[in-house]
Length: 309
Image (cartoon, rainbow, N blue to C red; front, top):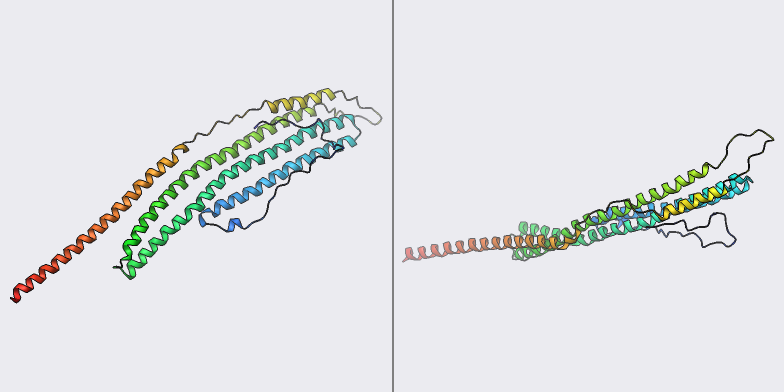
């Protein structure tokens, strides 16, 4: 993200007031206390980040206000050196404050990526609850009515529920890994960008201090005339040029997320097939046991008939 010092060479108030400072709408909600259990902690994290972003924006605005006050104070000293240097320092400090606002915008992108994880967690919860519900119902039915014909139906529903949940769980774990990398890549790259740009501005601001002659004078002496107005102006030009020429220095974070859907589908198909095979094998075994018991019963009846004759 390229940024230049899009401002005049002074931060002193103009005749025509500009637009009011941008404020952030931050309504308190009960969202972190609601929603599926799985997504509550991520929801809380997202809410906390929202507060942190608001604080960052507030810091940026306060820094700009401080810079303007510094310039105003310097002008009131009636000292040419202090007046000019304080104004130039105010320009650079205001730009440092603006970097906080740019940083906050990047944090919004980071926060948006986290919301994908929260939304996926919310969508997985119903399939997980359905699987638990059917499992509990099967266990209760086996305890109360072990021969109930509903057991077979419930077991088939459980197979379908497990297959559905496997899809959801696979998508959740894959998307979580993808988005956690993506979100903190955005966040940390923004931290580096802010620090590097603010370092550029701070280094140039320190150059201005060389133009302040702090040699003590005795009462009645006159300060030497200030002769560094052009030099101070060049410092601002250098700072602006350095910001314009700034380029990202972070290495890209590799990602293999492109194969997510295919791998998840393969895992789900295999797991669902194993579950169906296991259920079918259990049903065949039950049928075989039933057939064996029926054969023994018929054989006993035949033997009794022979003895009676």
